[in-house]
Length: 175
Image 1: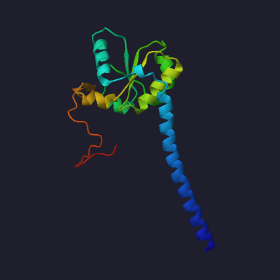
Image 2: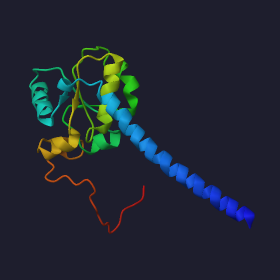
Image 3: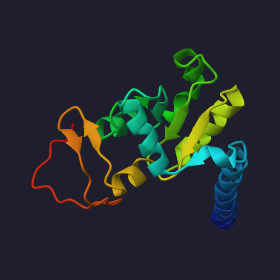
Image 4: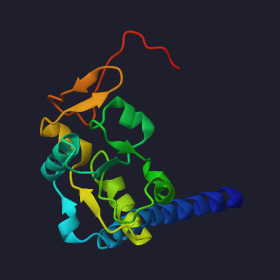
């Protein structure tokens, strides 16, 4: 019986420590992200509208800026900005090989802004001098009515963004 109580007491202590540690980890990540964002100069944090203007210049051949989508390949394939580049947010280490010129004009975005904040600050730490963090990401782009594309449907206009779309399938193969 003593062993049972001892085991229960140890389990309760472990659960209490784990919940405190989880809260500390979440707060630690927030603090770390805040610190990383300090590396990005305020004048290098731009709106979706500013990126749209730059995108139009790129499309017209008036700018060599790179619109850099740091979402996963699957997210990118579902819908992306025409002629944007895609490097997964976990692959910042590949940037010097892809874009060896530190003065390359890079507009970095993701779905919202979280991963892009990490990525943009890393690029600045690497020595890139012309990095812009786009506030709002692809969600902001879509909410403004700017076009997205994918290889299956061509141009897509999002009429309403749903963060947690609920669907009921009659049938769907599990692949």
